[in-house]
Image: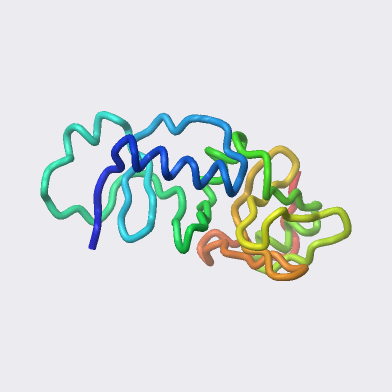
Length: 157
C-alpha cells in the first residue's frame, strides 16, 4: 500500500492529467498526499512535519481519485479546482440539479455535450457541484448517499 506526499515531479504529472482531462489552468498551492489512488490536499507545512515513516490512515481534504488515467473529482475538489478548468464541464438546468442532489442519474439534453466520454465536472449556475461519469446520454451520479437531499420540495436559488 503506497501512501506518500507527491514530490514536484509527481505533482507535475498529476497536474498534467488535470490539464489534459479538464483543461486545468492553474496551480495547486497545497501539498498533495496520495493513498491508494485517492488524493488529498494539505497545508504545505504539514508535509514537513509529518513526512516520516509512520502509519497514517489519512489527513487533508479529499479532492478525488485517479484510476486508469482518469481523475474523478470529489465535491470539494470540484468546488476548489473547477474554476480553473475549461473542458469536460456540463452545466445543468435547475431541474437536472434537483435530480442530481436527489442522487439520480441525469439525462443530457440537447446542447449538453462532453468532450470526453468519461468523467465530467458538474456545474449549476456559477457553482461546481461535483463530478459524474458520462455513459451515452446519461451522467452517472457519484454523489455520496450522505450528501443527497432526498426530498421533492427543496429549492435551489
